[in-house]
Length: 402
Image (tube, rainbow, N blue to C red):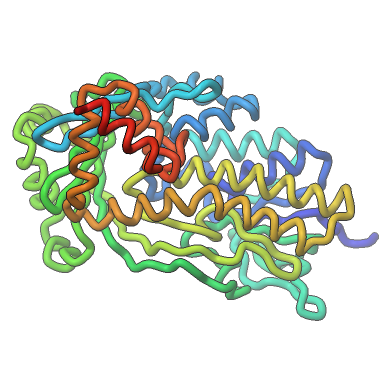
């Protein structure tokens, strides 16, 4: 009996990998999806899905499943700068709200959807090596927990295994637009801290924090400070976390009246792009591109990457399109979409005061609902920063304020 040759092996079964496996399987391809975790399981994440990601869930027929977990929708984005507050809706025609389901909920839902589509799923499977033939990746070696080492072969191996991607480390792709760690973020979950369907952001001196609702009537509250303070602050995470909130006394009082339900979790991440393809391999999600979590774009980015990459792979397999052409187009589309948000995000992550022209613009937005909605759409990923901060739009906002 000849060994199985899959059309695709997907390494990593969270927000990029499971949608990749699901969408490829729905197109009739034979897919193996592996992950070292067992689901449901948690992972460090803001787990906020902005409206474009919610629209993807709706296209895939999975949004009702998310809503059924009783995770509240997020309909309003609020930005409190101290002297003034901007409040707007991120909605556009096909994506009106966000959701923030716990990763124990969301990732299990996505893995199950991949299996239902026909993908073979192996949990607690650790990949130890990529298999090559004449310099082309043709499979993986690894083992399930307690099992014997096995080799599996495929027409393509997809690295969807996150920030610390084994696949990316193995193939060593070209990196570009790299930036260092800029921000430390620590979060936990609070009970009796209602936010009423809002994504609340607070911008203060060398501090920023945000809160939004999730499952089980809990609110996630993440606090960030510059990476330069990492060593000084790590000995007392809780103390520095709570002290930061005192820059907004009314919010700090709300937190004092709430109850912390879980431990503090924190991280700082690098910012980079990686060339997302090479002979026999592809990268999606954080494995191929990552930016600071201050704008919480990771899940929506992963969903979009999955759809773009599946279309490219389908063009290679079904239409005979040259691999380099198809994947080069995938990279170009990815980068064109995310570079403006990447630059916007990494600027925010410095927590430096905005320059005078941006301060003037932010003040001018206050009370202008159209402008505030536009700013909310930028942060929600439904409008490009390049479009919102275009000279003509800025001039219109300033003229309206004057």
